[in-house]
Length: 268
Image 1 (cartoon, rainbow, N blue to C red):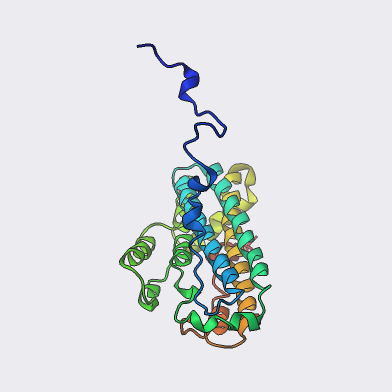
Image 2: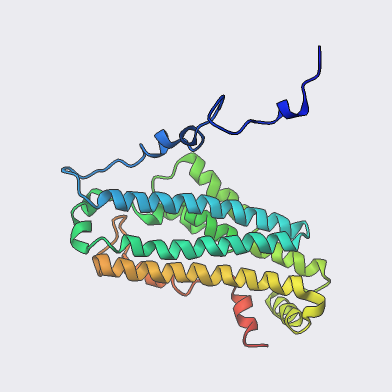
């Protein structure tokens, strides 16, 4: 039996003999059948509302993929790759902020046509968003008690994120790998300050610290943009999930993933 030529082991591009199509590869029939309106008669803007939030969840999935890989890269000492992945995270996070503009093309009156149908569903229940906060470093075990309606799989995912190392933990490993003290916050701040003033020796470490700070800043930008949008839509009304609405969201604005990195600014 003759051996196959090398060209036969490669996939031929083109329509003929194709095993995949654009639609089958992206699972478009399933994807495009995932927007089901609750309003009856159908409210025009409910499709926009569903689509935007489903897109957010897809981006959250991608962000979790990227930050987990960046964390592993830091642990492995591959700082260039970690920084590259965090740069991608930044671009996605800017996209998340910009998507609020699309949602704000919906007027408060249009939202009220179907808002009552949403209760008790709430963005507060986004498991992936909490996973992203946990893996970034803002871990709060209390969310597992405050969440309602979590599946066993979702509970396990959140517990796993609470237990596993965060991006901050990986960054502390980077400092130690470069013989920089990282025993407590003061030591970490002094070590980061040292990298800032000796970039010829610690360029990669300083760049990584800046990438983490950028991640923190963009997450804060999204929270700030989100609360203003909520206030524009529903004012001071309570949230559909029973929260205090914009008051709760404003209470989250001071959150910082990496307060030590912000504190370093005062020490430079």
